[in-house]
Length: 192
Image 1 (cartoon, rainbow, N blue to C red):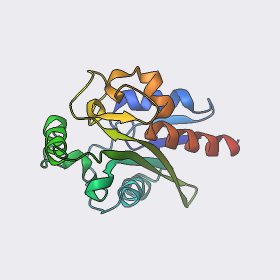
Image 2 (cartoon, one colour):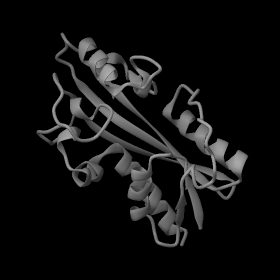
Image 3 (cartoon, rainbow, N blue to C red):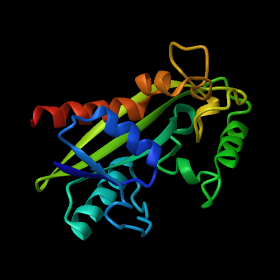
């Protein structure tokens, strides 16, 4: 079975391919010659994941899955949420996004948050959604050099270090994206 992962991130693609059964050939957007940016115009993670998957299925006629992820901070009523990547502006600057969030929480003791990933899978004319959640808290300052996005300021529950201080293997075993992808893999494995 051929399945498109609506991403241009080769590292993410290889990571997911290793988790999938060998009977599934994973293709990137580059592999199907999709070079246009798919605008995330929906107001929910579910909506954006579905929008991206539907674009690939409609335009290129491939079975496909796409994901969207957001950081949801309790005391900010779930913000930045669906706007996590562009929280401090349209340029998707992780440093500015983290600095804005840390500034907003500067005087707050309530720092509970969660990362949430939603994957939309379009397969044989049906759509399936898979969700992964990792609960934790926002640190008062950045810690660690690994990872990306908000990783240096997010500490998952049960750990004494941020995502940015963890190895990729450690993070993937507990992360929101890792959980959602494992649900996807489990579902695809049942189809064999």
